[in-house]
Image (cartoon, rainbow, N blue to C red; front, side):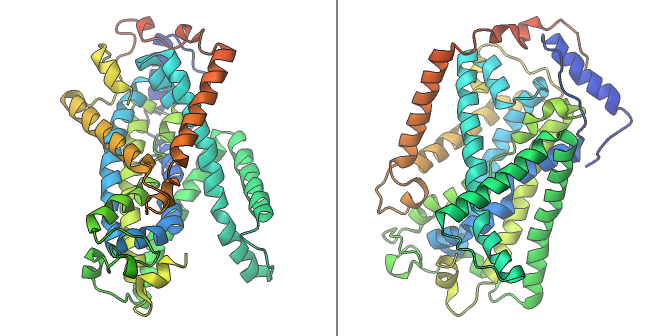
Length: 409
């Protein structure tokens, strides 16, 4: 991926001219290249963090074979990334999902998408940061001999707040600094995948490649290391196990969040979204395979497991993408299959099947669904009290575009 080309300045002017043709005057400087934009999306997705956090759970759900469930969300979300890429190319502006929804479905719908997305970002950052606590306390013990209880609520709160403060400081210093931090994160991710896989291979794997296609009896409650009961159905085990990589493969849309700060965003942002999904999938398969093959023969998986879609409506209403990246005749098949994938995974995640069900480890039975409803109700209250979105029609309108205002090469 190239960071810049001799045509970068002209391309940036091209995107800004497009926004002006839509009735919006660009407010931010385009300082990020393709690699920096890709780095923002890839580090948000962060396959290594997700795998190290949920590897034991996936192993407990479906044994070594759980690795192959990674392909489901990778392929499904790649279709979603293609749709988002088309939208990002049409609207090379900060805001991503909020902007796409507002102008393709309606301002009220866009407001609620922004509300849900904002809550999701807050929850995601906080929850991921809490996952650092165990590693941080172990590091302090090894380096300085400090004994910090990783299960203490106060310690979790303090460490998480400090980490959030550091992240906030880095973000508000500007897009260039954020881009450099994200690029450094990519190098760390590479070290955490290829580096770990190479080290484990050097020390010697304990199993052959065929081990990756086995269940090790996890479908039976007596041999399941986490005590999950799938009543002997390995298909049922895989259906729930796919939720592990589903929780990892999102965040690529953050490339669109910084579109207005990206050079030649109409071309580079769609590429960055696709690259984040593809390389994220490859990295996940590599590190997951290496970890599984390195499972000790003594104790087996038990020792490891216990240790540790708006655009469719827009098309129907006559919206035609005018960005540099377009799906053309493949648009509708991609939209439909991508939407069906999202619907299937949503049902799989929130389906209340009882606290004794293996799925309850992910959704706490009704809790996830109830929280979604509460967030929606609070959003409605805020919307009604603030009369939100009344002036949105005067901002970035497709009907304000002047014919042939911008010509793409």
